[in-house]
Image (cartoon, rainbow, N blue to C red):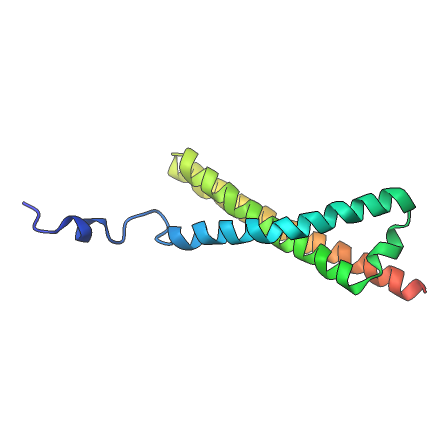
Length: 128
């Protein structure tokens, strides 16, 4: 017979033991993406009207916003895909492989994206 209370049985349960943190991070990143996406839509509209991408990327504010869009967007997408994989992939080996591949893919996408943004900015900055 088990002498533990219901609360004692429930403590420490869960796959990652940090579900609340992940839940909050998903909400915070989605809220942070709202103004960033508004900025991005406005910038895309400006680029399509002026055909001058270098003039828009030249601004330090715009570079910071583009870097934030990349970092926050990829982090938010990775959190969401991790949740989907944890919820719907039941084979432990497949789940481990898919989660590992997802994390590598997210990391390398972030590195390549940030490098491309900074190289493009430096190319424009040094050509003036």
